[in-house]
Image 1 (cartoon, helix red, strand yellow):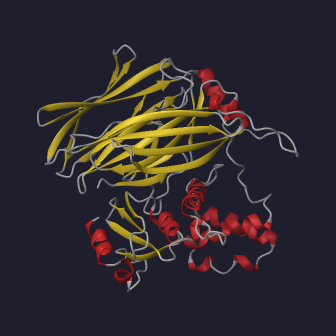
Image 2 (cartoon, helix red, strand yellow; image 1 turned 60 degrees about the vertical axis):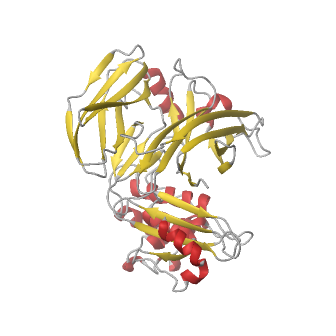
Amino acid sequence: MRQVQASGVLASCAVVVGLALAQESGTVQVSVARFYRSANALTLVDAFCRVPVSAVSTLTAGPGGAGGGGTYRVSVAVHDSAGAELTSQAWSQAVPQSLLGVPGASLVEHFAFAASRGRYAIDVAVTDSATGRVSRARAEVSAFAERPAASDLLLAARMRVAAGSADTVPRPGEIRKADLFVETSGRPSLTPDQASLGYYLELYPGRPETASVVARVRNASGAQIVATPSQRLPLGADGGVTRGLLDLGGLPPGAYRLDVSVTLGGKELVRSAEFGMTGFATEAAIAAAVPAARPADRFATLVEGQLDSLYAPLIYLMSEDEQGIYPSLTLDGKRSFLRTFWGRRDPTPGTPRNEEEERFYAGIAEANRRFREGGSAEIPGWRTDRGRIFLRYGAPDETLRRPQAGSTAPYEVWKYTRTRARKFVFYDVTRFGNYALVWTDERREPSRPNWRELLGPEAVQDVQRF
């Protein structure tokens, strides 16, 4: 039986503001990038759904005042070639009022899944909350039938290397590839102020090789505009990655294509992806539509309950000397504690942003959305075992989900392959969606001594094979 492991929706959507280029319509569009994992012959699919703000209407004002923008709901379903639904998810997204009036503006939703060889259809429905109007899109994708020479080419508006072992949760708009965070929308739109184009390409030679890599920018007619010098890249038998950042300042507005040419063993392969360049008018629209950076002191106007909700998840970060202080403080004391706590961890002191604080609370929000448990006695996602592991180690590289079968309750297996291999097994002890960590090979995390009895012999073999 074909298996698909859905890794879920990642982080929050990315805001992408750009001119409505000729090949872009006002309709919902879906694009994909595929990557291969030889250990289990799976294709990892990153899918991007571009939602034009023209498909979103302003919500009717409530009794207390004006409407605050729009909202839409995204429903995603993946089917195999026989029409069987392999995974489905749905979530909602708010659109600020300032963005609704920007011509050519769009928001991009990212989701990912892994699949064995075969053909799949990705169906996306975007429902405007104000009018109930539904916009639909479909993308066909083929999982690799065997080891390819290379992945698809992924383009990015920004890229950054993880700052350390604690930097595991992508910021809004980012996805993670090994030690690299990629801010991408599938088809980036660059601006005169943000004119760097990043690219990421995985190579799978099957044996040690030295590759030659050249990146070329072409215009809509195919003419070469920019070419990088040839670079030599040593690759091991497990393959490797070629990535780079091109400065395209001065490129006129329009539609372009990046070709990355790789020569391996005397044979050339080319992977291509499209991007756009906007003008100064669009850059001004971005500045007007995207909110400015938050004030340096975000805690000054918060009431005690809000401060407490920000404090509670810090148990995952606090040093020994910081523990036990906060609960006994006054309101002003609590504000001061949080200022000091995050001030110690600010990687760029003196600037309006604290990137580490933003990263942590973005992870909390994502954990709450994905791992909330408990039915009527709701447990926030960050307090669950899955949420805790997500916050400490980031999203898993591969996920195996098993529904209830006979006397075996549902369980999930998370596998990490970056940095070093880790595996976590979560078991739904109550059979009501409350997943507990029962086994892991990570020494710093607890395992239950009776985990084999809980899962049963067939499930234990399933976990060991994954």
